[in-house]
Amino acid sequence: MFSREKEKPIDPGKISTVLGAGTCVEGALTGDGSVRIDGFLKGSIDIAGDVVIAEKAKVQARICARAVKAAGTIQGDICSAGLVELEATAVVHGDVRCTHLVVDKGAVLNGSTKMGNEGSTDEIPEDEPGGETQA
Image (cartoon, rainbow, N blue to C red; front, side, top):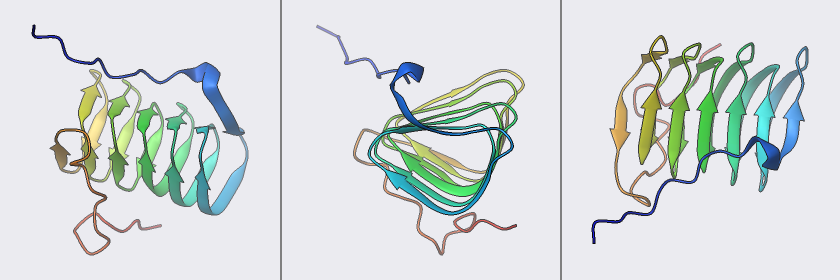
């Protein structure tokens, strides 16, 4: 009677692209699959699947994905159609829009959050505060 469809968790086994440790990329990362970042990325991330930011990863980008799991450092906004999970080692400097948010004890989130029903989390416009990433 009160059942709700549970949020699908991020499946590390379904990751199709890995940006390895020691790798630096500048530009736009787009695609249909899921991505794991262990290195450094500056630019933007627009992925139809999931994005996993590893503990030692550093990202200076606006992230749009189905779900985001972060353990590393993100400077930029996060827009998710579903779950955003910040592990204890995560540091985020940016705004977060999602339907579900999990913040572990120890995680740092410097920005605003907006949560809503699926489909109501429009991307954060470029002209809003926090909408642009800075080097």
